[in-house]
Length: 352
Ligand code: SD4
Image (cartoon, rainbow, N blue to C red; front, top):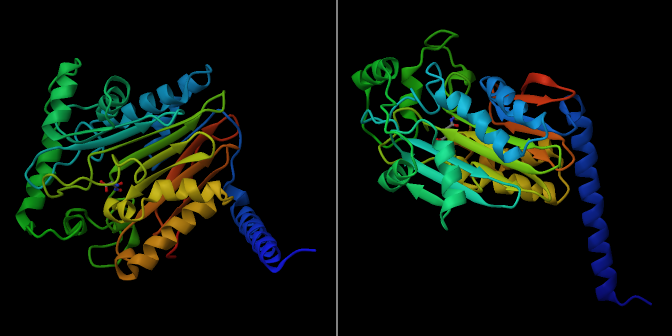
Protein backbone atom coordinates (compact mmCIF):
# COMPACT_ATOMS: atom_id res chain seq x y z
CA UNK A 1 0.00 0.00 0.00
CA UNK A 2 1.22 3.50 -0.75
CA UNK A 3 2.22 5.61 2.21
CA UNK A 4 1.04 9.24 2.36
CA UNK A 5 4.39 10.65 1.25
CA UNK A 6 4.64 8.52 -1.90
CA UNK A 7 0.97 9.16 -2.66
CA UNK A 8 1.56 12.93 -2.49
CA UNK A 9 4.66 12.59 -4.65
CA UNK A 10 2.78 10.61 -7.30
CA UNK A 11 -0.13 13.04 -7.20
CA UNK A 12 2.21 16.02 -7.59
CA UNK A 13 3.98 14.37 -10.53
CA UNK A 14 0.60 13.59 -12.11
CA UNK A 15 -0.42 17.22 -11.74
CA UNK A 16 2.84 18.41 -13.27
CA UNK A 17 2.43 16.09 -16.26
CA UNK A 18 -1.21 17.15 -16.63
CA UNK A 19 -0.38 20.85 -16.59
CA UNK A 20 2.51 20.47 -19.05
CA UNK A 21 0.21 18.53 -21.38
CA UNK A 22 -2.42 21.23 -21.22
CA UNK A 23 0.18 23.97 -21.80
CA UNK A 24 1.45 22.04 -24.81
CA UNK A 25 -1.97 21.40 -26.33
CA UNK A 26 -3.24 24.95 -25.76
CA UNK A 27 -0.15 26.42 -27.33
CA UNK A 28 -0.23 23.87 -30.16
CA UNK A 29 -3.78 24.88 -31.01
CA UNK A 30 -2.87 28.55 -30.77
CA UNK A 31 0.32 28.31 -32.79
CA UNK A 32 -0.67 25.79 -35.50
CA UNK A 33 -0.84 28.40 -38.19
CA UNK A 34 2.74 29.52 -37.75
CA UNK A 35 4.17 26.17 -36.75
CA UNK A 36 6.99 25.18 -39.08
CA UNK A 37 8.85 21.91 -38.97
CA UNK A 38 11.66 20.32 -40.81
CA UNK A 39 15.40 20.53 -41.00
CA UNK A 40 17.53 22.06 -42.20
CA UNK A 41 15.96 25.31 -41.13
CA UNK A 42 17.05 28.86 -40.42
CA UNK A 43 15.07 31.60 -38.71
CA UNK A 44 15.97 35.17 -37.91
CA UNK A 45 14.60 38.39 -36.56
CA UNK A 46 13.03 41.22 -38.56
CA UNK A 47 12.56 41.84 -42.26
CA UNK A 48 16.27 42.02 -42.98
CA UNK A 49 16.43 38.44 -41.68
CA UNK A 50 15.34 37.28 -45.14
CA UNK A 51 18.54 38.29 -46.91
CA UNK A 52 20.51 36.86 -44.01
CA UNK A 53 18.54 33.60 -44.14
CA UNK A 54 19.33 33.23 -47.86
CA UNK A 55 23.06 33.38 -47.17
CA UNK A 56 22.69 30.85 -44.35
CA UNK A 57 20.61 28.59 -46.60
CA UNK A 58 23.41 28.40 -49.19
CA UNK A 59 25.38 26.53 -46.54
CA UNK A 60 22.55 24.53 -44.98
CA UNK A 61 21.18 23.19 -48.28
CA UNK A 62 24.56 21.65 -49.08
CA UNK A 63 24.60 19.84 -45.74
CA UNK A 64 26.84 22.44 -44.08
CA UNK A 65 27.17 23.08 -40.37
CA UNK A 66 24.61 25.34 -38.63
CA UNK A 67 27.47 27.30 -37.03
CA UNK A 68 28.89 28.27 -40.44
CA UNK A 69 25.39 29.09 -41.67
CA UNK A 70 24.51 31.49 -38.85
CA UNK A 71 27.86 33.27 -39.09
CA UNK A 72 27.54 33.70 -42.87
CA UNK A 73 23.90 34.74 -42.49
CA UNK A 74 24.33 37.57 -40.03
CA UNK A 75 27.38 38.89 -41.89
CA UNK A 76 24.93 40.08 -44.57
CA UNK A 77 23.22 42.81 -42.49
CA UNK A 78 26.55 43.53 -40.77
CA UNK A 79 27.97 44.62 -44.12
CA UNK A 80 24.85 46.34 -45.48
CA UNK A 81 25.40 50.12 -45.66
CA UNK A 82 21.63 50.65 -45.76
CA UNK A 83 21.07 48.88 -42.47
CA UNK A 84 21.75 51.36 -39.67
CA UNK A 85 21.13 48.89 -36.90
CA UNK A 86 23.85 46.28 -37.32
CA UNK A 87 27.57 46.43 -38.12
CA UNK A 88 28.89 48.88 -40.74
CA UNK A 89 26.85 52.10 -40.84
CA UNK A 90 25.14 51.30 -37.53
CA UNK A 91 23.91 54.35 -35.67
CA UNK A 92 26.55 55.51 -33.21
CA UNK A 93 26.32 56.10 -29.49
CA UNK A 94 25.69 59.60 -28.17
CA UNK A 95 29.42 60.38 -28.50
CA UNK A 96 29.34 59.53 -32.20
CA UNK A 97 31.13 56.18 -31.82
CA UNK A 98 29.78 53.03 -33.49
CA UNK A 99 30.12 50.21 -30.95
CA UNK A 100 29.05 46.68 -31.79
CA UNK A 101 27.83 43.76 -29.66
CA UNK A 102 27.70 40.16 -30.92
CA UNK A 103 27.72 36.56 -29.75
CA UNK A 104 27.63 33.07 -31.19
CA UNK A 105 27.00 29.56 -29.83
CA UNK A 106 27.53 26.16 -31.39
CA UNK A 107 26.00 22.72 -30.99
CA UNK A 108 28.56 21.75 -28.36
CA UNK A 109 27.56 24.62 -26.10
CA UNK A 110 30.71 26.58 -26.93
CA UNK A 111 30.22 30.33 -26.85
CA UNK A 112 32.04 33.48 -27.93
CA UNK A 113 31.16 37.12 -27.59
CA UNK A 114 32.36 40.69 -28.10
CA UNK A 115 30.87 43.84 -26.61
CA UNK A 116 31.46 47.52 -27.33
CA UNK A 117 33.72 46.58 -30.24
CA UNK A 118 34.67 49.49 -32.52
CA UNK A 119 36.10 49.66 -36.07
CA UNK A 120 35.32 46.09 -37.22
CA UNK A 121 32.27 45.38 -39.39
CA UNK A 122 32.01 41.66 -38.74
CA UNK A 123 31.69 41.56 -34.98
CA UNK A 124 30.16 38.08 -35.30
CA UNK A 125 33.34 36.67 -36.83
CA UNK A 126 35.40 38.18 -34.03
CA UNK A 127 33.02 36.56 -31.54
CA UNK A 128 33.51 33.22 -33.29
CA UNK A 129 37.28 33.60 -33.02
CA UNK A 130 36.97 34.38 -29.30
CA UNK A 131 35.08 31.10 -29.01
CA UNK A 132 37.52 29.06 -31.08
CA UNK A 133 40.90 30.60 -30.30
CA UNK A 134 40.78 31.72 -26.69
CA UNK A 135 39.93 30.08 -23.37
CA UNK A 136 37.44 32.95 -22.79
CA UNK A 137 33.83 33.64 -23.69
CA UNK A 138 33.77 37.42 -23.89
CA UNK A 139 36.10 40.26 -24.89
CA UNK A 140 35.08 43.90 -24.61
CA UNK A 141 36.08 47.33 -25.90
CA UNK A 142 39.76 47.93 -26.63
CA UNK A 143 40.64 44.34 -25.74
CA UNK A 144 38.18 43.03 -28.32
CA UNK A 145 39.59 45.37 -30.98
CA UNK A 146 43.17 44.45 -30.11
CA UNK A 147 42.27 40.76 -30.43
CA UNK A 148 40.52 41.34 -33.77
CA UNK A 149 43.46 43.26 -35.24
CA UNK A 150 45.91 40.63 -34.02
CA UNK A 151 43.82 38.06 -35.90
CA UNK A 152 43.87 39.77 -39.26
CA UNK A 153 40.84 42.08 -39.14
CA UNK A 154 41.41 45.55 -40.62
CA UNK A 155 40.59 48.72 -38.74
CA UNK A 156 37.68 50.49 -40.50
CA UNK A 157 35.57 53.57 -40.05
CA UNK A 158 32.04 52.29 -39.44
CA UNK A 159 30.39 55.69 -39.22
CA UNK A 160 28.96 56.47 -42.66
CA UNK A 161 27.90 59.99 -43.70
CA UNK A 162 24.23 58.97 -43.36
CA UNK A 163 24.64 57.65 -39.83
CA UNK A 164 26.66 60.70 -38.88
CA UNK A 165 23.90 62.93 -40.22
CA UNK A 166 21.27 61.07 -38.18
CA UNK A 167 23.45 61.39 -35.07
CA UNK A 168 23.93 65.14 -35.61
CA UNK A 169 20.19 65.50 -36.05
CA UNK A 170 19.65 63.66 -32.78
CA UNK A 171 22.24 65.83 -31.04
CA UNK A 172 20.13 68.94 -31.65
CA UNK A 173 17.54 67.73 -29.14
CA UNK A 174 19.65 65.32 -27.15
CA UNK A 175 19.08 65.06 -23.46
CA UNK A 176 22.09 63.68 -21.67
CA UNK A 177 20.06 61.75 -19.17
CA UNK A 178 20.58 58.03 -18.73
CA UNK A 179 16.92 57.29 -19.42
CA UNK A 180 16.63 54.07 -21.32
CA UNK A 181 16.08 54.77 -25.00
CA UNK A 182 14.44 58.12 -24.50
CA UNK A 183 16.43 59.18 -27.55
CA UNK A 184 14.69 56.64 -29.75
CA UNK A 185 11.36 58.26 -29.15
CA UNK A 186 12.51 61.45 -30.78
CA UNK A 187 14.81 60.65 -33.65
CA UNK A 188 12.51 58.69 -35.91
CA UNK A 189 9.60 60.21 -37.73
CA UNK A 190 6.30 58.61 -36.92
CA UNK A 191 4.72 57.14 -40.06
CA UNK A 192 1.31 57.40 -38.45
CA UNK A 193 1.72 61.13 -37.85
CA UNK A 194 4.08 62.88 -35.45
CA UNK A 195 1.64 63.19 -32.60
CA UNK A 196 -0.35 59.96 -32.77
CA UNK A 197 0.64 57.13 -30.46
CA UNK A 198 1.98 54.34 -32.58
CA UNK A 199 3.29 51.14 -30.96
CA UNK A 200 5.46 50.56 -34.02
CA UNK A 201 7.53 53.57 -32.93
CA UNK A 202 8.29 52.30 -29.44
CA UNK A 203 11.94 51.64 -28.57
CA UNK A 204 13.03 48.34 -29.99
CA UNK A 205 10.13 48.11 -32.44
CA UNK A 206 9.90 47.93 -36.21
CA UNK A 207 10.96 51.50 -37.05
CA UNK A 208 13.36 51.51 -34.21
CA UNK A 209 15.20 48.24 -33.98
CA UNK A 210 18.77 47.20 -33.88
CA UNK A 211 19.53 43.53 -33.97
CA UNK A 212 19.66 40.38 -36.00
CA UNK A 213 19.28 37.18 -34.03
CA UNK A 214 19.53 34.00 -36.10
CA UNK A 215 19.15 30.36 -35.13
CA UNK A 216 19.53 27.35 -37.37
CA UNK A 217 19.36 23.57 -37.38
CA UNK A 218 21.43 21.75 -39.97
CA UNK A 219 20.75 18.49 -41.79
CA UNK A 220 22.42 16.60 -38.91
CA UNK A 221 19.93 18.12 -36.50
CA UNK A 222 22.60 20.26 -34.84
CA UNK A 223 21.72 23.74 -33.62
CA UNK A 224 23.70 26.99 -33.56
CA UNK A 225 22.87 30.66 -33.12
CA UNK A 226 24.27 34.14 -33.70
CA UNK A 227 23.21 37.59 -32.58
CA UNK A 228 24.77 40.89 -33.68
CA UNK A 229 23.86 44.57 -33.31
CA UNK A 230 25.00 48.14 -33.06
CA UNK A 231 22.74 48.34 -30.01
CA UNK A 232 20.18 50.98 -29.20
CA UNK A 233 20.87 54.08 -31.28
CA UNK A 234 22.54 56.99 -29.46
CA UNK A 235 23.07 54.96 -26.29
CA UNK A 236 25.44 56.06 -23.54
CA UNK A 237 29.03 55.29 -24.50
CA UNK A 238 29.92 51.93 -22.94
CA UNK A 239 26.33 50.71 -22.77
CA UNK A 240 26.03 46.99 -23.55
CA UNK A 241 22.69 45.37 -24.31
CA UNK A 242 21.48 41.80 -24.22
CA UNK A 243 22.79 40.81 -27.65
CA UNK A 244 26.34 39.76 -26.65
CA UNK A 245 25.25 38.25 -23.32
CA UNK A 246 25.06 34.48 -23.52
CA UNK A 247 21.69 33.46 -22.05
CA UNK A 248 20.14 36.90 -22.60
CA UNK A 249 20.37 37.70 -26.34
CA UNK A 250 21.06 34.12 -27.40
CA UNK A 251 21.10 30.61 -26.02
CA UNK A 252 21.60 27.25 -27.69
CA UNK A 253 21.21 23.83 -26.08
CA UNK A 254 21.62 21.14 -28.68
CA UNK A 255 19.42 18.71 -26.72
CA UNK A 256 16.48 21.08 -26.48
CA UNK A 257 16.50 24.08 -28.81
CA UNK A 258 17.70 27.63 -29.24
CA UNK A 259 16.36 31.13 -28.68
CA UNK A 260 17.29 34.70 -29.46
CA UNK A 261 15.88 38.10 -28.64
CA UNK A 262 15.50 41.61 -29.94
CA UNK A 263 14.28 44.85 -28.45
CA UNK A 264 15.26 46.73 -25.32
CA UNK A 265 18.11 44.63 -24.00
CA UNK A 266 17.97 45.84 -20.43
CA UNK A 267 14.65 44.06 -19.87
CA UNK A 268 15.90 40.89 -21.56
CA UNK A 269 19.05 40.78 -19.40
CA UNK A 270 16.98 41.06 -16.21
CA UNK A 271 15.09 37.85 -16.98
CA UNK A 272 18.02 36.10 -18.76
CA UNK A 273 15.50 35.82 -21.56
CA UNK A 274 16.89 33.41 -24.16
CA UNK A 275 18.06 30.93 -21.53
CA UNK A 276 14.64 31.14 -19.92
CA UNK A 277 12.96 30.32 -23.24
CA UNK A 278 15.20 27.27 -23.75
CA UNK A 279 14.60 26.07 -20.18
CA UNK A 280 10.85 26.42 -20.67
CA UNK A 281 11.13 24.33 -23.84
CA UNK A 282 13.02 21.74 -21.76
CA UNK A 283 9.98 21.62 -19.47
CA UNK A 284 7.74 20.85 -22.44
CA UNK A 285 6.60 24.26 -23.60
CA UNK A 286 6.37 24.58 -27.41
CA UNK A 287 8.49 27.47 -28.78
CA UNK A 288 5.70 30.03 -29.01
CA UNK A 289 4.41 29.29 -25.51
CA UNK A 290 7.96 29.52 -24.13
CA UNK A 291 8.48 32.91 -25.78
CA UNK A 292 5.11 34.09 -24.51
CA UNK A 293 5.97 33.12 -20.94
CA UNK A 294 9.28 35.04 -21.16
CA UNK A 295 7.46 38.12 -22.48
CA UNK A 296 4.90 37.78 -19.68
CA UNK A 297 7.70 37.78 -17.08
CA UNK A 298 8.88 41.13 -18.46
CA UNK A 299 5.36 42.50 -18.11
CA UNK A 300 5.09 41.17 -14.54
CA UNK A 301 8.45 42.65 -13.56
CA UNK A 302 7.75 46.13 -14.87
CA UNK A 303 4.18 46.53 -16.12
CA UNK A 304 4.40 50.23 -16.93
CA UNK A 305 7.76 50.07 -18.71
CA UNK A 306 6.59 47.04 -20.71
CA UNK A 307 3.92 49.20 -22.34
CA UNK A 308 6.54 51.60 -23.67
CA UNK A 309 9.08 49.28 -25.20
CA UNK A 310 9.40 46.35 -27.55
CA UNK A 311 10.96 42.99 -26.78
CA UNK A 312 10.61 39.93 -29.00
CA UNK A 313 11.78 36.34 -28.59
CA UNK A 314 12.25 33.80 -31.36
CA UNK A 315 12.77 30.10 -30.66
CA UNK A 316 13.41 26.85 -32.50
CA UNK A 317 13.17 23.47 -30.83
CA UNK A 318 14.92 20.22 -31.59
CA UNK A 319 11.87 18.99 -33.55
CA UNK A 320 12.30 21.91 -35.95
CA UNK A 321 9.28 23.79 -34.61
CA UNK A 322 9.48 27.58 -34.63
CA UNK A 323 7.68 30.08 -32.43
CA UNK A 324 7.93 33.70 -31.39
CA UNK A 325 6.22 36.20 -29.15
CA UNK A 326 6.67 39.89 -28.48
CA UNK A 327 5.41 42.72 -26.31
CA UNK A 328 4.09 45.01 -29.05
CA UNK A 329 2.74 44.46 -32.52
CA UNK A 330 5.34 44.98 -35.19
CA UNK A 331 7.95 42.27 -34.54
CA UNK A 332 8.52 40.06 -37.57
CA UNK A 333 10.74 37.06 -38.21
CA UNK A 334 11.81 35.21 -41.33
CA UNK A 335 11.68 31.43 -41.73
CA UNK A 336 13.45 29.42 -44.40
CA UNK A 337 13.41 25.67 -44.90
CA UNK A 338 12.16 23.26 -47.55
CA UNK A 339 8.53 24.10 -46.65
CA UNK A 340 8.70 27.81 -45.91
CA UNK A 341 10.33 29.87 -48.60
CA UNK A 342 11.77 32.65 -46.45
CA UNK A 343 8.37 33.90 -45.37
CA UNK A 344 8.12 36.86 -43.06
CA UNK A 345 5.80 36.10 -40.13
CA UNK A 346 4.35 38.65 -37.73
CA UNK A 347 4.99 37.65 -34.14
CA UNK A 348 1.97 37.51 -31.84
CA UNK A 349 2.06 40.24 -29.25
CA UNK A 350 1.12 40.66 -25.60
CA UNK A 351 -0.33 44.15 -26.17
CA UNK A 352 -2.79 44.37 -29.06
C1 SD4 B 1 20.08 45.96 -27.52
N1 SD4 B 1 18.61 44.15 -28.15
O1 SD4 B 1 21.18 46.47 -27.71
C2 SD4 B 1 19.46 45.20 -28.66
C3 SD4 B 1 18.80 46.16 -29.55
C4 SD4 B 1 17.61 45.71 -30.30
O2 SD4 B 1 15.62 46.18 -31.31
O3 SD4 B 1 17.40 44.56 -30.56
N2 SD4 B 1 16.70 46.58 -30.64
O4 SD4 B 1 19.44 46.08 -26.48
